[in-house]
Length: 102
Image 1: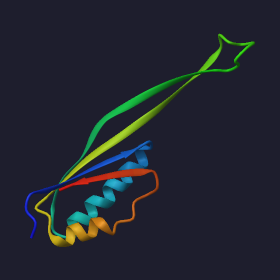
Image 2 (image 1 turned 180 degrees about the vertical axis):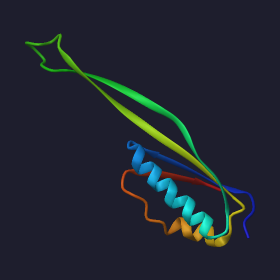
Image 3 (image 1 turned 135 degrees about the horizontal axis):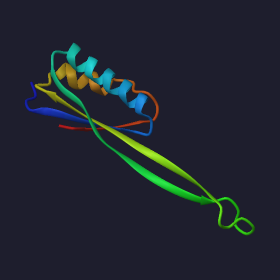
Image 4 (image 1 turned 45 degrees about the vertical axis):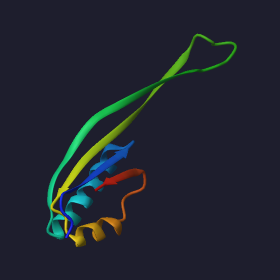
């Protein structure tokens, strides 16, 4: 029986998708008998982009876009072997990056 904790870090561009994935991980961990701490929302990083509309005529006019990077942190305390197996066979929504540290 593994001791310690499993730290799960989720990253996504869409906040609703990452919340759904976090809920699936929590339900899987609780169903196998582990204690869960989280999800803890990490600070949302915003990346701004400025693009010129035209390269020659309207050089001074441009459009601004931004990309937001959402993150969640989940700690699974006192994991069981079923918890580890359940996390490895979990189907998460597309667009979610998961990083698991034991």
